[in-house]
Every structure is written in structure tokens, then in C-alpha cells.
Length: 431
Ligand code: HSE
Image 1 (tube, rainbow, N blue to C red):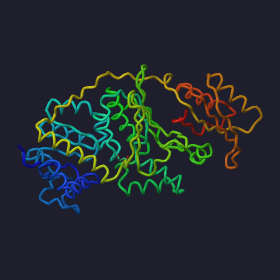
Image 2: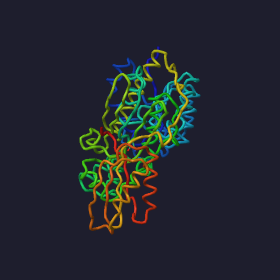
Image 3: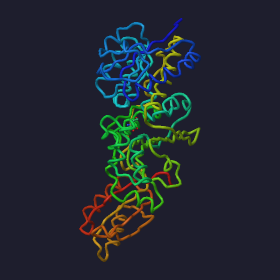
């Protein structure tokens, strides 16, 4: 019977230092829950000389991964170094060395998750990754355990804290995009390269992880339709408000008999929809199941301690398995080979903002384009904007396919009376 569990911590940045803090501050509680102490034995860092405010002794720090992996007293590796290739290599080597792994790495899990889970199974090790999605919200465990008996049909929500923080600050505090991003970076929410946040890639990776698990299939990053924050034009946040909507960078995943569809894009939610009120770095995800119906999970989606809470939750789960001798006993192979829907089978309502030359007959011409494409219109509004050269038109469609929407936008952009479709959004959460 083990009398202590030793951890090798790879990385001591925003999340790693949070993990050390929680393991230190909650040591007595963990000892009570597990019956043994959990100790950070080694910490892998890039620079030994950096000043660190931590109770972890200086002798634990090393720049050599081998020193961590070859330490036989280390039972569990916690990978919070970030990045892709180095981290993937470290996870593989840890598993091959027979050590369980807890990771917060969505880049690695989105791209190589199934491969690594298989490797973990082969080596009879646990590989847990709760912190890879939704910061402090236990989404992975919910899908793996709480909702395990249900058939999940859809997931939709806000899975990137940085962009939600930026959109909240821009809308409610009139902050510029640049200032809001700088503050999100300062607070430790943004990725090392924040373009992953603002271009929607971080959210797309998280949706790959969630959708693969929820639908027990092998969704790939290239299956995800991605549009980032740059698609939101000046004045769109106010325009959305005028029509009773809030813009959020949202992820959605659906599954039906035609296959799976996964998207990340700026979406219009009615102001009355709960996701419209999810602000700052908070995330929230709706999960729809055949049996359970609609559930919603909400909490901090980024930041040191919330993310570290998920990591240390996994540490506790892995420690329990080690103590019971049941580590590495989960089966991870997906049940279904992936089948991805095409754009003709994805349906939504759309909001189109179109700048046109202010000429007689334009409205009729544009409405006929919609009808030629079989799209029925719910709302058409014209409002002259003094700052624009022409007239600003808003068209809101009834449900159409993404293909119809793309074809209409394409045709509108090629119409001489149209200066441009300045922006377009999918509308979610409306009956
Ligand atoms: N950059 C990420 C976000 C961190 O803002 O959501 C948490 O995964």
C-alpha cells in the first residue's frame, strides 16, 4: 500500500504555480480525502534562475525532463507546460515510463488526444485532461461519468475566456479591443500567442475535445467551421443590441443521423438567453441529452486557480486510482467513426448586415436574391447611417442551410448595388 504520492510538475507558469499553491494550501484536506500526502517532488522549468514566490523548495526545480521521468518515486506527471510538440513528447515519455499523466493541454488533446489515450491504455496509466476545457468547470468528468448513460445530441456554449472577457469589456465598459486584450493577457487568461484565442482556434480545439467525448467519435480540428473575433465589425455590438441580441464567440456541436457538425464563430444570442449574461472570463456550456434534456454548466473559464482546480481534481482522481490499484483501466476507443455533415445539412437563422448604394429598387433586388435561394425572410430593416457611404440594411432570415447562407452572401457581394455584406452572424437559441 502506498503511503505517499509524488508528483512531477512540468511547467510552472500561470497554471503550474496555481497547482503548487492548491496542493500546498489544501494539503490537509487532500490528505484527509486520500489518506496519504501528495507532494510535488520535481518541477520542470526552462529557467532555474527566475524568481518564484512558492513554498516548493528550490531543490525540486530542474531543467532536465529525464530527471523527472527517471525518478522512480514519482507516480504522476502533471503537464502544464503548454505548447504542442514538446508537451506531447513529454506526455508520451511519461506514459511509456509507466507514469499517469494529468494535463491541461488542449492543443495536444485536440490533435493527439485519441492517440495518447490509446497509449495510456496500453501502458495501464491514467491520462486525465479536465483542465483542457472550461477552466474550473468540470465538463469532461460530467461527460465521462455524470452523463455517461445518456446520448448527447448537442453542446453549445462559450469556451474561451479571453474573447468573452474582451467582448464584455467592449460592450459594457466601452473599452477598445486592444485594451481589453491587454488586460486579459495581464490577468493570465490569454494564450501565449493570443491569436489562438481571438481567431477562435483555442475554442475550436476545446470543441473538438468536447464533441469527440460527447458523441464518442473522432472529431478533428479540420472538421470545425471557425470564424474568429475579427469578423465582428465596428458597430456590430450596438447593432445587435438594437435588435435584442448579444454577440458571443460561441462553440456549437450537434449530432443527428446526417452526422456531426462543429463550429466556432461569433453568434447572436437573444438577450433573454442565459449565454448572453455570461460575462468576462466566465464560460458556460449547454449539454443536451436524449434522456436528461437540457443542462447548463457555468464557471470561470480561464485563470490560474480555477484552471489549477481542475488539474488538482484530476490529480485526486488519479491518486485514488493509484491507491486502489485501478489506474489505467478505462477504455477510450471511440464508438463511432466520424461522419461530418456538409453545409447543406446545417440549419440556422442568419443575420446579414449589408451596405448598399442608396438607390431606388435596391431592396426589391436584394429580397429577390433571398427568394431565388429559397430563403424566407423574418425581418428587413433599413437604417441610414451618416458615417457610411450608402444605406445600412439588416436582413434576418428564417431557418436556412449554411450553404444557402454562404451562397446568398456570395451573390450579394457580387451585386453592383451592394457595397458589401459588412458582417453576418448565425442566430442561436431562438425558437
Ligand atoms: N486562453 C484560454 C481562454 C485559457 O481564454 O479560455 C483557458 O483555456
